[in-house]
Image (cartoon, rainbow, N blue to C red; front, side, top):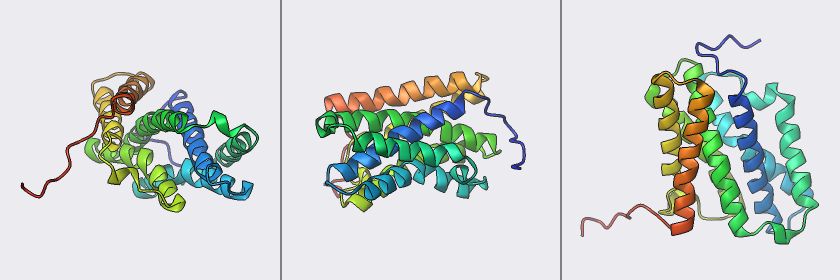
Length: 210
């Protein structure tokens, strides 16, 4: 059995985690579906995208790798792949893909930071773990799909994950219940990512000192 967490994360935040896993699994399955791949490829993309960021986080903070010990997670990812496989492609436009990804990003960043704090990780590294949790799965998905990683585009993506993670850590340190901090942090990060999608907001690019 895993050792008790220094800061219990309570019964609510794990549901935010499962939501983030499901949404990211959907984006992974969609990345394969849009390339007309087999169901095996859809299922693999769903699983690797859904658990990629959380796996890296758990390895870094010294936690048991979550999906290896929780039978719901792999089943959830495979179930999402089945749902994508049997639904019409017209439902899954790039617009829908972007909004699903934004929702997963916010939920996963909040939970990742909260879990890191729960394992006694100091505030700044805990916020970094929130960003890793939220972004690594999507980066793996993009690399496997042969797409330019979101890291190589100026969109406010990692910034939205960072805002979520910092809010999660800050609100928790301010004394808010973890699930309240998680909901507020996820809402803040989602709002920033939504604004970036709607108004095409991005950070300025490096100009080489010109």
